[in-house]
View 1 (cartoon, rainbow, N blue to C red):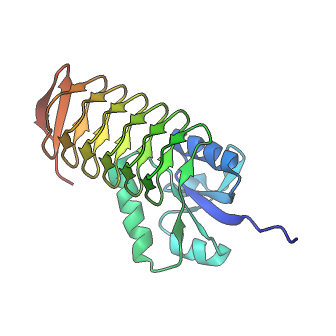
View 2: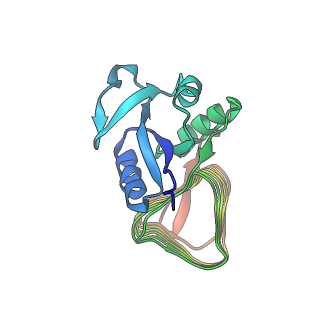
Length: 222
């Protein structure tokens, strides 16, 4: 029987987050990384974990078409920048599959939906009947319990815990080690500070910190 050819993908981003994504892709053994894409033209030809930077995000359409790239992952930790690159690629109107990266040591429950381009890291838990949007990051040892809804372009940071039936709107960050109790709604473009304990619903576009978490200030709308 003829062996199925591994699909070629690119990693968009060259930071520490990109290194973690590369490690996950290698462990998945589903795709072949042909190179990285960076915003800085002066870094062309340099390597990250053995993979060359082959282009910039300004010439991404030509790069994808020339190399017949199947798809890739936007490995950028900043939610807004990840969204901007996503829109730029979508506007190119070219075939490009945003692939997911799920570490083999993550635990994914039944009846769970995970959006395209999302990264789920080692030790993360996503429990049954949860929906994770597109282009999200569920970081190392984060826990998302049953029946949750995580909006597009969100980031659940390392060791954060989201209890059951929580709804988090798009572009929100739940910081390192933060805890959100069950049945709450967290607004969009909001930042929950590291180590916070969230006991009440949180509105859109605010920064909250503390135990219990309180609104510290408004967050600029993007």
